[in-house]
Amino acid sequence: MVLVIPLKAAVRFDMAKALGEWLDNDEQQVSFQPSNPLQLVTPKPDFKSVACRDDLIRFSSLRNCLSDALLKAESHAAALKEGALDDAHEYHAALLEFERRGFPTMDDENNGLHLTWKAAWALHRDETHSNLLWDRSCITFNIVALLSYQTSHCNVSDRDECKKGVGLCQQAASILETLHELASSQDFATVDLSSSMLLFWKAFFLALGQSFVYRMASLTKAGNHGTLSCLSQSAYTLFNDALSKAQDARLQSEVPRQSKQWATYCKAQAMMAAAKAEYHQSVVQRLEYKYGAEIVRLRQSLSKLQACQEFIASLAAQLASSSSSSKKGKEDAHSAQEEMNLVDYTSRECQVILPVVRDRLTEIERDNYKIYNEEIPKQVPEIEPKQLIKSTMGYPPTMLAPKRKLFVGL
Image: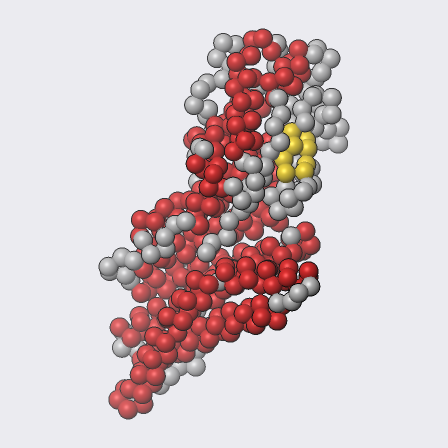
């Protein structure tokens, strides 16, 4: 089970009417922030609404179609079935074009725009702004949310599916990097678009993408254990980074239950990745007839697997102890059950790998005592991580240029 970002639902709004009236009102000009004298402000368009009526209607229709598709925080499947991802790309591209033309990019209560989006995690909390940058930030957030849903359905036992997962994770991380730059310059109250939230999800997708890279490499017939060790070590490092970001003070304050679940997932993944890295390195040592070093690697792998097993067992104990008839007890039990669901695959994976490592360790310790008599080193070198996942892809072309050109007749 992979973490999925909930959607931000939009409230329908007649953009065509509001922007048309703003264009036709000569007293309305582009607002600016007096506190920021270096702010770049594009002048208000010099044309009236009648000159771009079709563009305004199409723009408003795109937003309202997305408002109808993105109805609930968990409606990813229905939204994708209705083509919401393609529509979101098109709306994002249209927003960029409208911004370049000088349409409102700063809050101004007099410009007629009232763009409302619901919070992704606090379901009964709305936020409204009167500028297009707010809409662009929210629709970009939803694009990443839909990508996270697609990623969660990639089969980790299929090489082609893992390859697809790598692409989705790289795209999501790249989009989040740019979204973080955009949202950091705005005054948004929601935790959804906070720096803490966006940095966590970027780190998460980098870690998840790296784990897909590892799995893809492990599914090849000629899997190189040295390479697999470095790839898994990188996944360990990246999941540890995501774990630290999940424990950010603002996330723990505003989304405490979710941040705890995210931290649990990342910690279990990091522990398993570290154990795998040590195991693959032990195979490298075995093939090089360095049985003493192999024993050290196997001991470290076994220790990490046992620690992972104990961590998951502690979650099960927490679930058992939190079962109560009280409201708080039920909430705690539900949260603990969700955490157990998140680490279920890791738990099963640990149960499969641990006996293999333990049996090999028992065998090589016996053989080394009776046959090889190799000295067991006190320590071995750190495994060098090899990160192949990146967040520098930028936006896909479909998010940058609309399929149908806007303002053609001007």
